[in-house]
Image (cartoon, rainbow, N blue to C red; front, side):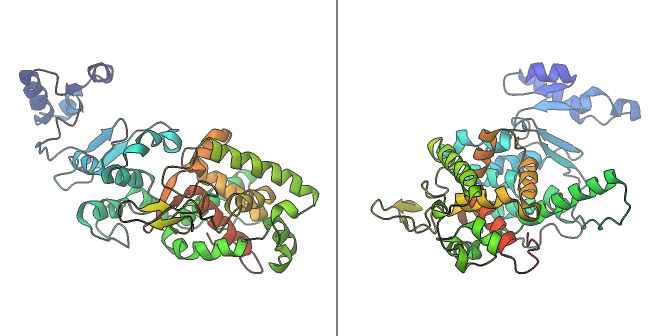
Length: 374
């Protein structure tokens, strides 16, 4: 703490310094500047632990920066809430390494208290961040996100962006490429913001692909003609796809990439759907060893088959989604960890992989034009 404060050239406040030094630092931080020059001085910034936040009401704080991701959402709410207490627009920023979203939560999986789960949901939220806070702190539903008169949160700012206009003929190639990137980015955000609707449709989608092969369906667009498992299909492309399926299945299962309590670990199906599990009064789900998952070899084979053939460039959208979450798409371990992340769909827990399965399925099975319904 002191080393970082010295490197930043600012005050420090934490529990290990003397009371007199705390008082001196706090007075320097809260003192009203005499002029604009003093307002820019270094004592207008302070490096502190949560010891400063307890019971302190400084109305003119404009920005609170967390140098690492807080573990408990209630603590984060109180600490970040020190900014803008005079009602003026202020910022709360979390600094995390680019790999944190893919790996950083695993160390907490064994200690999934409610506050940590809520903080994780807030950090990964694809919908309004104020809604996550209100639900956790006040049990208040905010279905429409940030309202008029509120500065939009990061997620609502993204969702408010309009669709880019289609590029006219003769557009500069660089501009066309940038426009395509914007289109993909918007599709990613639309896709990530539709979890609630998808929950009710997930099991019917699993049923659609049960005993069917995605490669065969995309070649024939006939569900009846595709009614056979991938391992019985003899076309050359199948050998390549089968290799990818076996590799990814092995990596995700054997290396335990599925987050704890996120799904049935054999086939990646949410525990709320997999018949291997039943609700238990003592824990959320209880494994019934003598039962088998009713959707074997559905999720991973379908995802890999569709991404391999890449109809309509849908694979690029998934890769853009990964990059937006800070995943190095060239690092297989990062990708598998991202697939195994636990997410929540309107109360039902699952993995990122099963959400990708659902999104790709909607893209492929869309009638006629196969235009994506992200």
